[in-house]
Length: 90
Image 1 (spheres, rainbow, N blue to C red):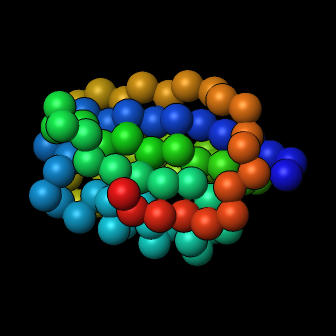
Image 2 (image 1 turned 120 degrees about the horizontal axis):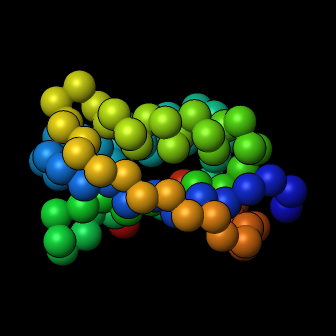
């Protein structure tokens, strides 16, 4: 698989606002693979793999989230792609 992989952690009011569902829909529509999950510390964590531009658009979405979210902080790190083939909510 060619492309990039990013791990993103969004903090703020990010749980209970359909963040994971909105992320999955956007990832699927852009052909991005990976996963998104609620963390026990109240953050939302996601991994995105795919075309660099498509992944960048998902990272930007994580900075704002869905309409009812209030994102206060986002951490982004680069990782080596693993060749994921789908996107899932965990």
